[in-house]
Image 1: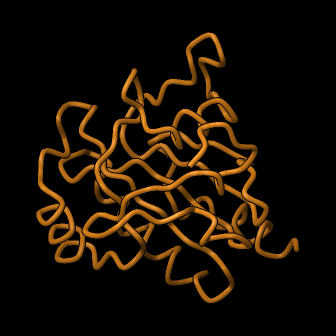
Image 2: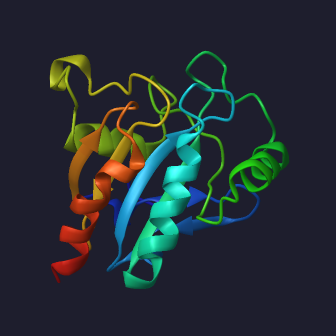
Length: 169
């Protein structure tokens, strides 16, 4: 799909163990998009992400996980290994996608878009670079990026922001 888009819905992404899907399949839902890793100090956040997903899924909320090996080689596994790890250790049931790059010349177009919409602390001059695993982007029901949260931000602390977006139609 086109790399130029005004919402996240203009992008296609490959599932962890399946075909590509269009993010337009998630239209009308509140999304939390997160770059993940299995061997990171923040890896226990999978539990918090799964808890948010279970709490709000019925109200139109999705967590979208994107494994990334760009930070300290903390996601070296294959798709099968990543999926098994997430399920066995954290009971992850939210959608997980194929491993991607989030920074640099090979950054996935979705992440180039997310960073341009919410460039983070370094701002546009820093190219919006993702600093580490478990950076989180909150997207409203219309596909607009409304917030970016650092790796250290615990998923459970996002509940109020998620609820606000779920309540607005």
